[in-house]
Amino acid sequence: MIQLTRLNHETVLVNSDLIVLVEANPDTVLSLTTGERVRVLEGMQVIVERVVEFKRLVLAGASVAGGGEAHG
Image (tube, rainbow, N blue to C red; front, top):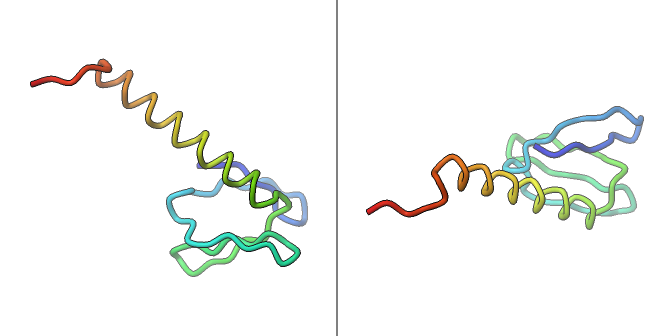
């Protein structure tokens, strides 16, 4: 999940796996697989960076949990 800020400055956590589309027109709007649209203060590049960092953390955790080695 990534932390974002609604236009009213309310902090929200968004499941990055549900993001289908990110638009900037001029507000940044996330379209989710649920059909919900979320307007946020963060720009598109910030959202991309947060999703990438979240995915890195998930993969690093999977590597640690699995011992980081392939078993065969």
